[in-house]
Length: 312
Image 1 (cartoon, helix red, strand yellow):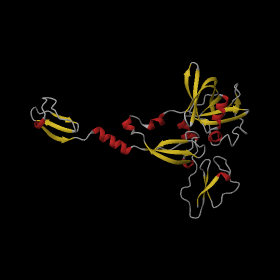
Image 2 (cartoon, one colour):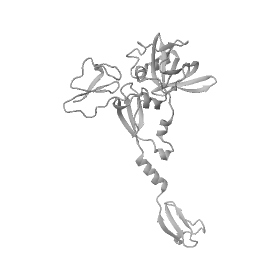
Image 3 (cartoon, rainbow, N blue to C red):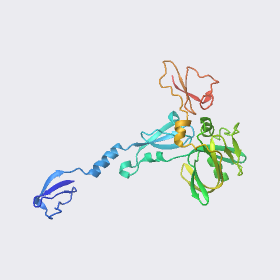
């Protein structure tokens, strides 16, 4: 941009680079127009600053449940499927932001302001019960009452819902504890029976189990539509049963992070000669030259075979 002054009428005005200057007041042009200043293009300058400051998008893989997800650089990564964070999340790549948030009029951080609930979604196939933790259940219509549920395709619960067309969701309350989260979120139904030895549940009229411990409501549905989202499937279900179990407040995702989730012990630096063993399930770290064969992780209750040597 260039700023001119007309020596005939005294008007000052700006003209984009490459355009012929013409006084907007007296319409004079040529030598009677005096160049008085070079003006930086504010739009281009702002865009350059924003692009330079635009955060990278970091790609992570959760070593617990296998989910892959993206997080803006500078944000704390938390697995959207099993809610784990820390060392169990593997950085697998990065890419530049698609556009500067300010320039595009969007800010990825806004997604973190959405209020999420937490649910134990259950299914039954050929007499086998299974469940997983999710934060993706929401009402989509009121007449008829329908809900949507999005589940990662790597989850066994996903495959069971695909084949049976039914699911039940127990709404987690603030009375839920970390043990409940670990049972349904930190292990795969392909490797363990999540309901083994667990009695805090009941079977609904649809034949599906729902959880009565640390929950305040249950919503069951028959699938009426599916949407393929690549890594996930969205199920739209017509609600067949919905009941309030108690008056305990529902647990939000933020409440879980601040009040329920247990942060694994972090060793940091160790005395010379000592060895660190890390639980590959929850990230708990044990310091000692040898890990006892009968050692049980105090957080997730997994055995010594699920620990790996990480320092020494």
